[in-house]
Amino acid sequence: MPSDLVPTSPVLVFGGSRGMGAAIVRRLAAEGRPVAFTYASSDATAQTIVAEIESAGGKALAMRADSADASAVAAAVDQATGRFGPLGVLVVNAGVLMGGPIDSFALEDFDHMLAVNVRGVFLAIHYAAPHLLDGGRIITIGSNTAERIGSPGSSVYAMTKAAVAQLVRGAALDFAPRAITVNNIQPGPIETDMTAGLMDQIRPRLPLGRIGKPEEIGGLVSWLTGPDAGYMTGASLTIDGGWTA
Ligand code: NDP
Image (cartoon, rainbow, N blue to C red; front, side, top):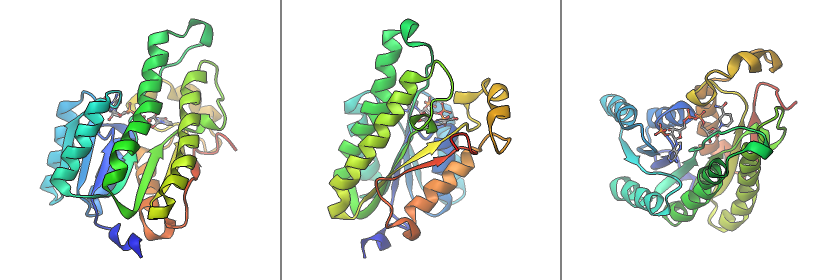
């Protein structure tokens, strides 16, 4: 059964220096996997995570690579697999949030959000898939805004995350012959830099009455890498404190 390759096989996380990505990196490294991760600009933060993992006896590699840059994404895949070998798990977390109503939304922001949140996800899967072990796992981080937008000014962001959900469905079919599963996590409000400043207005609207923690996303990623998740593919899993309920 190919999934016996999964428990200790290497991981590549796109966007692993902060927020949920950092929680995912820490969780999978703590479970004994070598973890390579990319980031856009947080050199010092990324190196701190590497040092933390290595001092605990783990293996980690941080790579500065803009998800909007195809050659940087390809180079990151080469560097990660060159260091740790074929991948068991690919996590595509890197994403950006810019808001505003359509009539005043800056075209540069539109292009950048599509470049990172949609094209960047495609690029990561495109370049990493040939290096994934049969039975491996691909996990994307979408958003519950793909299901319900909820607030004005979020149309473009929500559109990018809806695109990810549909890309995942198609990718699940493409990689099923290799027993590679492809699933999409759709968080609701999670305490990270991305949402700092928004939480006081969001909290009262959350049925569970609290904001999610990055570690809770790390836990769901961990489950998706394990044997109990082997029959799930093409799914979008919403984890949002009941926001879309
Ligand atoms: P943060 O802004 O806290 O962290 C984003 C991470 O992605 C950082 O590691 C950042 O690197 C990296 N990144 C951003 N842009 C690029 C890029 N162009 N190339 C490479 N890496 C990049 O985000 P969150 O942890 O909050 O969000 C993570 C994912 O979850 C995103 O896809 C987001 O859309 C999604 N999400 C977030 C929610 C929330 O409430 N926080 C809710 C639903 C979905 P660097 O440190 O170098 O900037």
